Length: 246
Image (cartoon, rainbow, N blue to C red; front, side, top):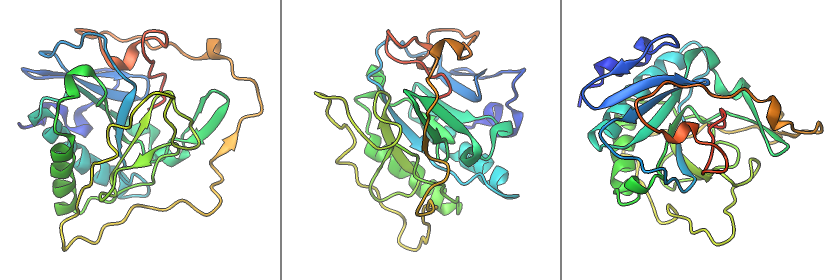
């Protein structure tokens, strides 16, 4: 499926993209893609997959633009319900910080987010979807980014990691009683590819424990006009709220 209506350079904070099935809108630092013909049902189990794409330096924007075209096209082909990409003015993401539960960390490596935990997606072949994206990214020499703080890497591909929304921001963790749905996925780079994830310094200066008390009431609320409910703007009590926590 072509993505001409959703090319990265066409998305802007004052406009929207739309085709016969998908609708794109801006929501607090991200452009969110939503499939209008899939019933969401309000059931999200807090799992999400990140696609890490190098967005630093003069070539970073072009690298991310090309990667978005590849990732979005595959996800649209597979009827994935919702996914998003960081807006260009927030690049590079290594310089962006997020605070949650008193933890302040870099947002590096979270350029693209896939909402894989929605009930309608749980029967999808994520092994096949992520392998297809890996193949296309590698074939186009897309440079990966850092492993996001608090994420667990998906084996075999330098692009993917995942986390539970209610896990720690500093290290990968799963709430008691939860099962890891991606632990058995193993991906493979094409044999000739020599692509490696960027590495944090031994001591990451972007990671710190916030000493100030966290005040959720001071956070900016998300105001979105959209055709139907989306996982990116639910409240915390219902399941989770994006609140720019990519």
